[in-house]
Image (cartoon, rainbow, N blue to C red; front, side):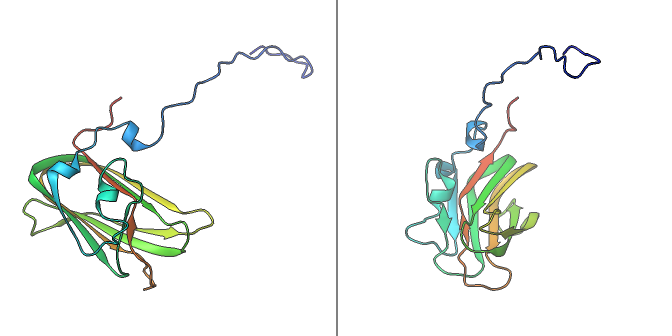
Length: 174
C-alpha cells in the first residue's frame, strides 16, 4: 500500500482474492472409524424413526432420539481394544430452550468407567441451537465409550438426542 500525507490521495491497494476454504464439517477433514463394523451399541431407548445408527453412521440424516424423556445412555463396546485420539459430538435442538448435560466416559473393561468430560449447554431457539464438542484425547486400550445425556436439567419433558458421534484414531492431517 502506498502512503500519502494527503488522505484524498489513495494509491492502489495490493490485494489477493482468497478462494473459499475447505468445508468446515469434520467429516471432510478426518478419517473416522467405521463404527458399524467395530462396535456393538447399547442404548437405553430410541425412537423408531431416529435409531442410534442415524448418529453413528456417515450419511445418515436424522440423528438419534430417545423414545422417552429422562436420562439416557449410549454405550459403544468395541470388538477389539482401540486407541482413540479424537471424539466429536454434535447436538442440535432448534425448538425447545433447555439446559442439557452430558457425561462422556471411557473404559478398558466395560465395567469401570473414567470421566473424559462433563458438559452443560444452554439451547435456545433464538441462536444457540447447535452444540459441537471436539475432544482431542490420547486413550489406549479403549473397550467401551459411554455417553450419558440429561436432556433438561430442570426436569422438563424433553427427549435426549444426538445428531452425530464420530471417533478417530488419528489427529487431523495438516
